[in-house]
Image (cartoon, rainbow, N blue to C red; front, side, top):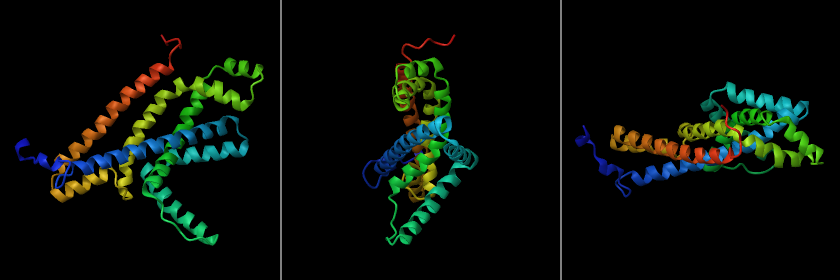
Length: 239
């Protein structure tokens, strides 16, 4: 079987598709990293809104997280991309400005970030609630403002509790980039499909894409374990 596979199709230079696959892979990593970072920011604000916000802020955060968890991710991505872009253009035109085309990379990061933010909100909220109340009360007794307590005590203390869930969200983000192929983003999955269709070598290219995703997962696992070990220094291990 291996004798019938033309591995020269994976060459980096034309007519090989190896270079295109690597560029698609790097674009997938960019999308995942950008969307994941945006999701963390949204998650922090969402968790704070649920825990410390007023009634309106809590209700908005609850509706947002419920929507993200209830609707399939592919539907959310199509909704955010097409409906969101259309609404923005209509708003700009209503204000007297010309419409605009959203950059593919930026749009992909926003879509993944909005999806990630819903799950990150719940992960971070649970991690904040795991911080011993005595640490927060001690910081308040020293006269720290609520913002300083959050920045210097709550967020650092909740990080070890949030890491397992956030690590899982990173893995999900790397796989969610493949869903953007449906919208037409030139990431690894779309490039793989194009290469396979052009050469009729579906087995070769999809195995190659799977190995690239696997390599990303293995490297991510090593980095996340090292970071989690560092974040848990000084903590009493659970027996």
